[in-house]
Image (tube, rainbow, N blue to C red; front, top):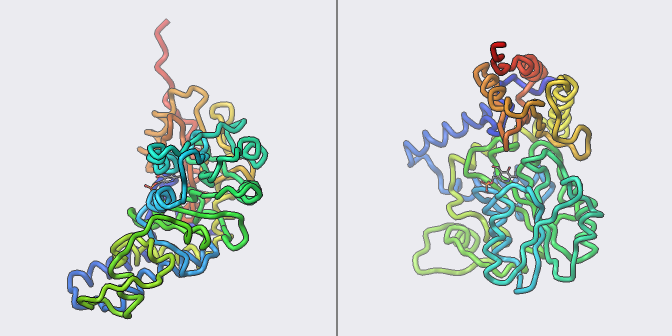
Length: 378
Ligand SMILES: Cc1ncc(COP(=O)(O)O)c(C=O)c1O
């Protein structure tokens, strides 16, 4: 398929594409000569980003909320959902901390935060159905799990949530950009994601999408002057006029939408994914994952993440059968210019569109060359 250009980065931090680097360089140059920044850019730059994200996830441009992280979107939900003492939020044991922390302060209000321990560690529709109680108001879960590489089935889990009047809130940070999603066709009530992983954006980026009916029920309100003045007057230099406009989802955008460096660079990255075709990107990534799994010397290494789709993601977890050697394997690959992640003591490979079959071959070739513990003299 040849999507990749080749990279030793098969790890947690995705490189910024060249087109994004060019765009951000231009944005930096404009800030060096700020008279070049046009007033229209204050509305156009965030809108272009929303358009690209909306196209990628199957949502209307007006419904995309710009954040600065995954946590930003989850926090909007945790603070805004109409929850009362006695209500229950379900999370999944072992989920990434970003999915968990935003809910913890709700305990002060008497909201119960319960972590499910599904059999085998992977949440299924059946396991969820068995856990729901009359107090359950929401399930918040990652789509792809950072520490296990497991992907959950949004369609069947969302269906159970819908049947029981439970909101289904999804953290897509480890999947959006690596696989297609169409929010118009899924029983998902909210999707949040960071921008710096599979979406190849800069740090301090993220988005949220909240189903309009749910968004309108949020009890948390915030108001940003620029959003409201642009919506009400079409410009933003009115002194003495402070009308709250009807701005819909934009009311929840992170403050300072004139984030020219990050937003313009991230737009370029998202457009690159769209132009490559997210189905093609997903197929390319999965081909590399398959190559990695097929090439693994399973006498020496054990595959910990799912071997097959649909539970398989683009996060491939492997451990040396002598687990205490993982750290030195990681260091060895690093020295050879192959950047993988060491997570919870295990080795994690996460190939993406810039990687090639040669990158995977190189990593596999290096894997058996593990420094063995020195033999004790007899
Ligand atoms: C599943 C998941 N969610 C979220 C994040 C990051 O959270 P935030 O964007 O809030 O920093 C990560 C990793 O950094 C992750 O793996």
